[in-house]
Amino acid sequence: EYSIVEFFDENDGYKCGYCKSKTSAFSQGMWAHCMNTEDYQALIDRGWRRSGSYCYKPTMHKTCCPQYTIRCDANAFKISKSKKKVAKRMRQFLLNGDFTPTGQEDLDKWKLHCDKNNNGETSIYQVPANQSIKVGDVSTSNTETLPSEPTSSQFTCATQELPKEPNIDTDLVVGADPSKPPCKKAKQIRLERRKNKLLQQGMVGSFPGKNPKVKCKQQQQAKSLNEFLPHLDSPVDAKHGLEVRLVRSSPPSVEFESSKVESHNLYTKYQTTIHKDKREDCNMKQWMRFLVDSPLNPGTEGPAHGYGSYHNQYWLDGKLVAVGVVDILPSCVSSVYLYYDPDYGFLSFGSYSAISEISFVQRLSITHPNIKYYYLGFYIQSCPKMRYKGAYHPSYLLCPESYEWVPVEKCEAALKEKPYARLNVLNDAVDNDGIVTSLNTVRCLYKHTIILYGKYKMHRNREGNRTAENEDPRVREYAQLVGRSCAERMLLYRS
Image (cartoon, rainbow, N blue to C red):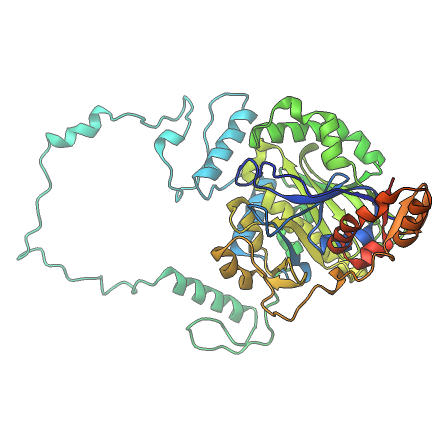
């Protein structure tokens, strides 16, 4: 059950995937030949992440776009209005196949989906009456026409007699019709409607709002997160069916193998469409190395599925439309990557999969209370595409110096001033696990033998190899980065 790793020196500057600078990104890395989930949990709590079997840690004070580990307390998660809208749109689509765009971007995605489902034929996009769109944005059929250019009827008003201006003396404006009830604001109407509903249900309690207080028998219970997710309670007569399957990817399960080709094709479509990658760069080998291979040893403990690496597959009417790559660890579910079918971009699978995985953590915590966090990867204040992760409340960022968790709200001001900052403002907080007083207790693997670093050097000296002394700086850096606890448990490969 030992973790076996090879540690590498810090990389030279390489191209940043966020700001696109050519030589301004820096990180340290190590290759994990195998790793137990306890050690990997400790590593991600020190700012490490994995890509396949390669583990890396950004050099925070040096890299151009510092990447802070972010996690959400799943059991305390409060779904925001925007995320409720995502779940509502998914429910609306599953129940009756309809979709209500909330902006031009949503409308464009919905139009693209309709075009592809109609095999390129023109179609009518059903948009609510209160939806503001441009006429030029709507395709039409032969049965319904919308003018794309001005018609002659639009110019007839120039030859017609203009309306008569009102006579101030005779056409007196007397205001609202006194015989009709006074107008009310929409908010007031909603409050009164809710008040009447509570009274009909026999509730007598404190009613929110500016209206007089009404006494309630009981407080209304807030909806659980599961109630917002339509795939968990989809009715039988729904027009579409969404099924989420958790399949083990390493070692591969039968379910994973049966969907392997389809999953890789989906990944290729996503990368070439969304990220504009070349198709030859998305081959099966690259996909396997990036999102399938994993050093994590499942072990025998943990939830029913077991710890380790999985693919969370989203099947819509029997078609694979999204895949969330996750690791289930002793304290969390860690999100690795997500790819989805761009034809279904209007369903916002990025947000929907996140709240779905938070719900998954909540369900796991019932039987395994230690699993209570959802790790969203890295948070980058200077990158809008990565800053959205702070919207999942409550979320915390990992301080790169004390390795303690700090609420996102308390970090934003410091990170706006400069990309790198000590997030824990308490100066006396130190990284105790990063204090390495002796290298003799670092555990190594040398010639298929588990040996402490101090004895390893003695062996090398006896063999007449005096270069062992020169390894001290690298081994010390390794122990400080992974932490003393991991350095004394994991096996550092020496050749």
